Length: 137
Image (cartoon, rainbow, N blue to C red; front, side, top):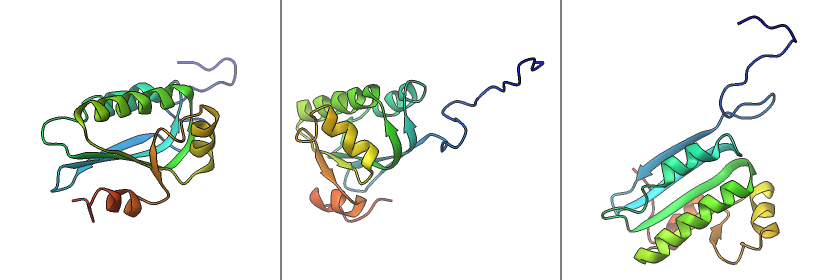
């Protein structure tokens, strides 16, 4: 493809100076699901996060922890995904714990009036300890 205007295509979830977007999911022996999110949650990356979170909780899941400590931006769409996950975990009676130690995510939750709806922690260790899990495999 020839570039006539000095424009270059951007990879999914990338912008100049932005971190790449990724979601890594692991499980503990106790049935806790840990999703670690990196980058910006925006209109481009939210569908990928939605795909990763859509199946949780399932089967023998005892808790879900979403680590947002490396998220540099969270759109309204990202907040909607977290709200949907909270509804699913509440429906089956398991805890949802968030790791939120960045200003952009805290601000998004506060602006949307959601900070009291979620159980949020400043560290992953604190979130896991709140549900009785000391580590992930």
